[in-house]
Image (cartoon, rainbow, N blue to C red; front, side):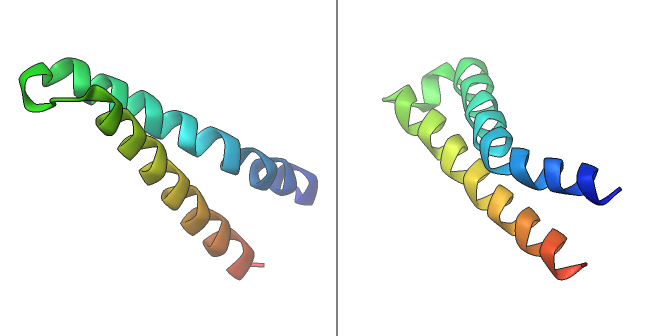
Length: 64
């Protein structure tokens, strides 16, 4: 079980920003008229995913 948890902890910093970027792409494509520059929406999703990943890692490390 500890090995699985460590694998999850290793994947979170990569997976969460990617999912955030994907969410940004989906948001920009659904709301095309709201964004002057779609890179801001995608970049915001990446940063949001990175922050969420850091929070998840802190919570996982705190539970040990």
